Length: 270
Length: 166
Image (cartoon, chains in turn purple, cyan):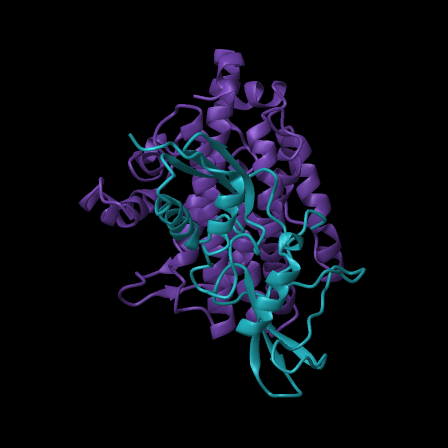
């Protein structure tokens, strides 16, 4: 228990808990999907970069789970591994599979999808992190400063890939545009706070959904203008809202795999 | 009855000078700028460390090595080692000695300055040539990049600059 907890109203605590779970679960799933690319990326530099970014992102998730632990919500490893799908608050975008097949068997993963998902997600994360640096909850504001420094390199990496593939062959452009459609179909809950919207926003834990959406669009506009493309449209209402525990079967399958080792021996010391 | 000798923070710092980066044994956690605070009370010691990168798998090893090194001192009782996220670790916390010893290990220390466009430059860790190219911003660990020296034709690593200005 820390000093913050004593001063918090139940509403405030509920709101910060929800927001931290959204942030933690997002990075947890994003990192997991990224790690499935290990050994499969188009060339070795991309492979090293992608796995390094996944490792950083898992570190960010672990940091958010630790902040939840400090709040008395539960033990960090348990929060990461033992919650069932309908308790998870990650966006649908982060749980989607990388493509057809399974990485241990015959993965037919889509690199264009990986690039677009990673670029759009990382840009959204940057917008959230910038806003979190001003959060009324100090522990998360302080941690956001640290995440922002690491995110600088992730953003640089995915923006470079995005621009290069968009300026590449007709096949590459076609694949990229297909990927943009898929990613944007799932973008409706990325900036959603779900049922906790009002409490999260009025307590100034982070900027409003509307404000962050605008910032995201504005931040990618120069890249899209240079590519002579229009900034994609964020769906108003998500078909499923991950922030409220609504998910696809992709998440169920991912949870079985990623928690398999942990569940073999939950008390093991790593 | 044995006489109780209190632990001084000077002594703790001396011990921490011998706690090395698990992969770079020429550099201590002090030279990396990871030690934020040392407090002692009687025989008990508390060390506050800053993580270099949040996802670095060496953090737990460093924590354990720090605890074990301090527990070897007969006058030390309880040892607590914690990581905090604030202040954020930045690459300018690496000491001058850290810079020298990183280079001795074959890793270019992080640059002290950024160009106006945010890019940065380091010289070859081996021959000091400025004629180098960036091969991959991401390297074998979160904190390192891979570069190539066109003078001595060696691949070398550099510590990524990390700054709050990013």
